[in-house]
Structure formats: C-alpha cells, structure tokens
Amino acid sequence: MRLAIGELSAVEPDLIRFGWQAVTADTPDAGAELEVVWCPAVQRCEACGEDKRQRDAVWLPLCPDCGQLLQVAGGTELDVLQLTYLTESD
Amino acid sequence: MKTVVEVRRKALAANDQVAAELRRRFTDSGTLVVNLISSPGSGKTALLEATIPALGDRCSCAVIVGDLATERDADRIRTLGVRAHQVLTGGACHLDARQVAQALAAMSLLPADLLFIENVGNLICPTTYDLGEDFKVALLSVTEGDDKPFKYPAIFARAEVTVVTKSDLLPHVRFDLGAVRQQVASLNPIGRLLVTSATSGDGISSWCDLLAARRAAKLAGRR
Image (cartoon, chains in turn orange, red):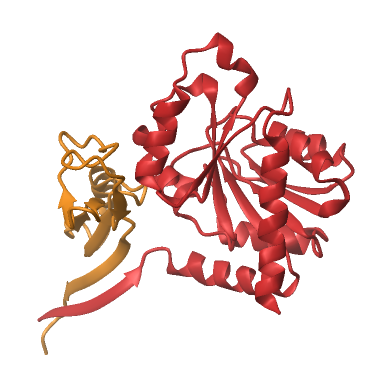
C-alpha cells in the first residue's frame, strides 16, 4: 500500500506505520508493506519567485532573503496512491 | 502474479462526500457555518456565550457542540435561548461530517442564519475533517503561549480567521501579540486575526460584524 501523507495532514508516518503493523499482524495481510510518500508543505516567496528552505523544520516567519511574507503550499495530502497485491496464478 | 492498482483516492473521501452534501444543504438554507477549533479550554463556549447575545436580532443562531462527555457545553448555550445539540464522541478527538449530519437529523437546528460547530478541543485532528463549513476559525487564548501557530501550523494555515481570546489577561501573561500576528500571517497571508475577550467584550463587535458580513455575502452569492 502506498500512501501520500502531507506535513499538514495531522497524520504522522511513523504512527500510521505502527498502526498498519498492528492491524495486519496475525491476519492474512501480515507482513504487508506500507510505503509512505511524504509531502512537505512548502513556504514560497512570491517576491523572490522561489521556495524557501526551512531549517530544522522550523517555520519561517518571513522570507530570509527579502523579508516579504511567504505563501504556504501543499502538505495537505492524505491519499491512497497505489495498491500492489499478489494473486494465485492459474 | 503481482497486480498493481492505481488508487489515487483521498483517504477521507467518504467524509468529504458527506461534507459536500452538508454544504449543499447549508447553502439551500442560507446558513453560514463556522467550525470552531482550538485547544481544550481556549474559550470556544465562552466566545459563543459572548457572541450570540451580541448578534442579537442580526442573525438567528444554532450550535452543534462536540465533547467526549457531558452535556455541559450545550446546556450553557441553551441558557442563551438558542438551539444546541451536543455530540458525545466517547473517546474520539474530533467531529466528522457524518456526526454533523446525525446532529441535524436528531434535532431541528435549521433554518438558522448561523450554525456554529464547536469542535472537540484539539488543535490537530479536527483540522483535516471537512464538516461542510464555510470556514474554520482557530481560537488561541493568551495563556497558551505566543508560539502556538508555528507549533500547530496545520490549523493556523487552514483557518480563515484566528481569534485570540482572553485578551483581558494580556497585562498578566507574557504573550507577544505581534509575534502571533506574524506567525499567522506567514502561515496564512489572507487570514484575519481578531483579538477578543468574552469577559470584557473586547473585539466581540468586530467578530460579530465579520460573521454578519460573511452571512450576507453567502446569501448574495446564492441569488
């Protein structure tokens, strides 16, 4: 199972992996893998025309280069992207 | 044989579908719906206790309030002479769209000009559940600390309005309002920030004006 999880989705990849293991344990799905595609929220400066990198996951109050307000984009993903399963071959 | 299926579906699609139905229903009834989200004890109920009488005849109000247990908050709202339905979530930390639909079925809350949904006190999970609201409001009391928007960015990035509460306590606590303004502005450049006190009445009229204006705009957009 491949999931997309955004930084602003209120879901933590480590916790959902732990939950996945717990609910699949001792079932026919035991050992099924959960793959998380992490989707960070991006702080973008329209004045500079580029995304600004946060340091140590600390949000930037203003653009470190030009001092303008930043826009927040992305990071709200919580999507089931892809499912891969094995079927008995004929 | 290995089979790969492209799903590309939102994990909360079922909730979003119910929320879309609710949104249509609220548009039909001309009801502005506000989803109030904050930590426990930030003053959601107190804000409503100050807001509803201040709105007076300008808007008829109804309230859905979520808590883990007790009818206490709904009772406080009913004292104001307003219809209020308490959703008891048991152990759950947020309201979902289905619970709002159930509340509407359980109690005659519509028609109303304004429906407040007072979410369960929690700054995290309620953020991602669409309840069919027109907008989310984040409450932040001055006793909680002025670094909260950056600590809980998801809600402050999504909330159209941030309401700072308990402003009457500002002289007694270390709370840098300027820092909060800057954090909220950087997470949400188009968001509004209001400073209020349910105790002193500070900022309540601006908040009521905003609600009445948004409700009028919704009606105008419907025509």
